[in-house]
Length: 77
Image 1 (cartoon, rainbow, N blue to C red):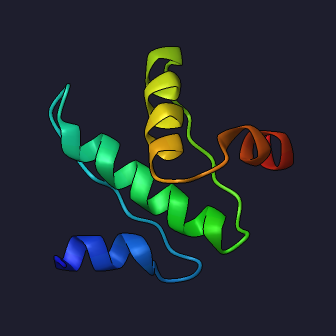
Image 2 (image 1 turned 135 degrees about the vertical axis):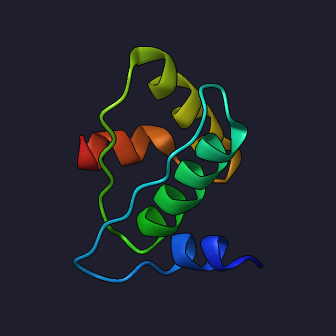
């Protein structure tokens, strides 16, 4: 597992980080889904300010990673 993946799975509390990527770069999708799914599994909330297209793509990817997206949106929305 890469250092970046470890950070996404267990981020430091009260912190933030930024990933810079090129348009269409798949790593953004993968990393957001990993970061959000790990937080949601621990009962934490998640917030993303995205375009409608990115919202659809992130929700689909989270569903693939085993997140009950309907419940997560209902509980955290």
